[in-house]
Image 1 (cartoon, rainbow, N blue to C red):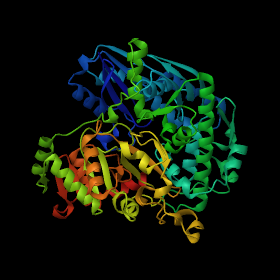
Image 2 (cartoon, one colour):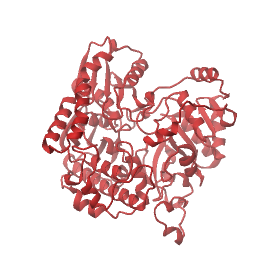
Image 3 (spheres, one colour):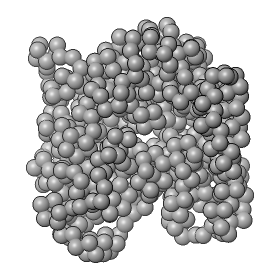
Image 4 (cartoon, rainbow, N blue to C red):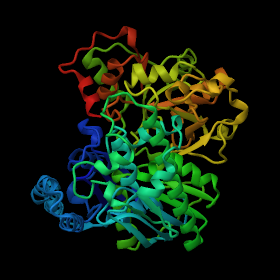
Length: 606
């Protein structure tokens, strides 16, 4: 049985296909259209999923959409009525789009999937999040926590999964939302809502928690049952086109930072403060859920579950024996969750989990390109390259990394979710003191404060970081082991804000954030043998089992999908080499690269 899941029309649209309960394919639409966070109907992602499964629409049994548009539209109308006449301009802006497009999802699915004659179903938004968290997890039973901005009415929910059933016990409802609270500060500090939240998280360690008490006093009331209540007098998002209002400006003594203007110490302090508050809320929710469900394990999804610092705090508190977080925790993962919910709940199929391994397949669920496809493309475009055997290219690239070269690494199936996990990655030497600055300014063209993640061989994770289990999806933050840290001078200890950036913190400084933390990806040979063998070869040559891993893209663009995308990104930046499967391209040997437009203009849209 073939089930296609679809998410669309808010942000990060995607498609996922499962066959008899097994995940066959999943991908975000942005990777194909090259429009970051593309929210349009995922025509290309659907086409890819069908191609990967070697079927046509006629072979689909069920198509399922990840939320209920009518219920969401009801929430929007009721909100506007509750706040009227405020928000009339926003009403005129959003309602025509609903009447023209979003309410007709079923008709659009039928039109796109010509030849499809099966059922079209709809799950609720947080049901799809819960299903994406529980069903691929390695747990036969687990507590479930979903946290995001808003679905139909729910903004968070908790419950539990057991065998093939999910029971959601309670939900937090709009306009009270952890995700929207965090996004309000994302907006106020000058970053783009629904894409800049991770920047705020990365900025937080540079600041001091000066505003925590003010936030807890004026903005949010944290309840004993894990829920929150927001003081709506400070927020504009229920009916406006901005997240915050003048009352918020007065509370924090200033207007929102303009995009691209310098980040101030105040912005850093605000980032630290809302991050601390979010961690308090997440911990409170986790403790309450443990009390109510008595489950040993916890699974998470929803956009806030991408807050890997908060996830790390929950793990360190030992509230549960272990966590599992959906790698595509945001709306994209809703496509997968919706399909799995139909297979297990609607069709009542049995489920057998293994504590040894999840069902996400490393989240390598997107397109791959063969050596023949890549070589044909290179020859057609007359780009110089060298072809190696797999063993040869591993040795060559390990040597290049040891010489502090920056390498675009393109191999295997593309990752599903926002993290590059070694298939569409830019990699470098974690021991280099200059690598963070080089990658940020010359490769990614992004803010200098942004940290980079380590990829570490799974069996060596405890040698480098204060964590005792794998972290395959880069969704947990842990601290660098004390024996690897560099003691700061008295002068260095007195530095504030961005001045902390250039102080080496450990023997792997390029991936050590200013608070000695790192967002860890552990690498297993089972899920990504090429990437594992490369890092292992680097370890044999240098004694270090850690390298830098950042997503293969520049600021303002999605992660690369195809050889063309990879080459274009390679040539736009100061990367030294590009690896595409068994092919190596040297930047110094490439012809002059010309484009018809100034792609840097896209940076301003990020």
